[in-house]
Length: 370
Image 1 (cartoon, helix red, strand yellow):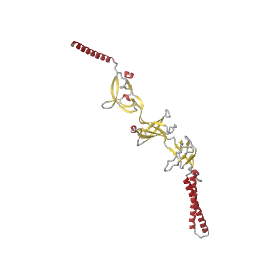
Image 2 (cartoon, one colour):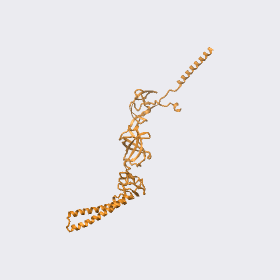
Image 3 (cartoon, helix red, strand yellow):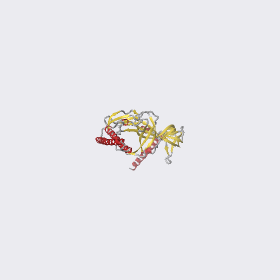
Image 4 (tube, helix red, strand yellow):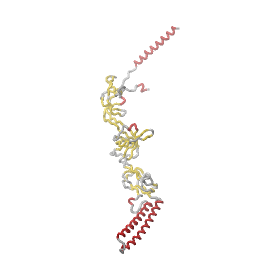
C-alpha cells in the first residue's frame, strides 16, 4: 500500500516538473515585443470650447401702432428692404362708443360757449366803437372770444380723431398710417389685413405689425455650460459654423458673457454673444442654428506629437517620452508641453523632430484580432 502511494506521488511530481519545463520552453519561443516609433511633426494646434445657439440680428425693431383698430392695408412683405419713413400699413379705426360720445358732448359744450362769447363780443365791440368802454376792457372780451373759438375748433378736431383716427390738417402725422422707424430688411409681418391691433401704451406692449432689422449686422447668440464658462473671456475669437451653409466658417468676436447662469435640463447655462465679421458678404438668414468654436489658445506651425505618446512620472507627475537610442532600446526624455487640442500637443522643448518616440501603449496583434 505504501509503495503504491509513493509511486503516485512520484508520478505527480514528474508531471508537474515536465509541465513547468514545457511552459518555460513555450515562453522562450514567443517573439519579443517590438515597439513602433513615431516622430514629431509641425502642426497648428487650436484649443476650443464649443457653444450652440443661433444667428440673430444685432438690433431688431418691432413696429407697433399708437392707435387701436383694424388692419386695412399692408404695403410690405417679409424679405423687402425698406427705409425709415416708408409706409408699412394703414389702420381703420373702430371708435369706442363711450369716447366718441364724450368727444361729441365736448364739441356741443364748446359751441355753446363760443356762441355766448360771440354775443358778448358783439355787444362790447359796439360799445367800444361808440367810446363807451375803454380799449383795455374790450381787449379782455376779445381774448375770451378767441379762446372760446379755439376751444371749439380743438373739440371738433378731437372728435374727428376719436372717430376716424385722424383729422383735417394732420395728414402727414395721421395715426392710421404706420411707417417704419428704421432702415433695414423686413424679417416678419405677423398680421394680415382684417386683423385687429392694439396700440402700444404704458399698460400694453401693443400688437407687432412688422419686425425690421439690419441684416448686415448679425450676431451669434448661444449658451455655454458652467464647466466651460471659466475658460472663456470677452474679445476671444470665434469660429461660427452654420448648419444650413456648408463648408463655410464665419469669424466673430466674443462680446458678452452673462454674469448669471440659468438652469436648463438640470445644467447651468450661461448666455454669450459674438459679433460677426462685417466684411463677410455672405447672406445669413436670421434664426439659423449655429455652433461657435471659442478659440481659447492657438499655436501656429509648432512642433507637436500625439498626446497618447506622452507619459507622466508616477512620483513627480512631470511629462516625458521614451526616445529610441538603439535597436529597441529607449531612454526617458523630459519634455515641456504647450497647447493641446486633445489629440496633438505642442512640444516646447525636450526633443527634436528627428527623435523617434516610442509608442508605449500600442495594441498587440493578438489583442487587436480578438
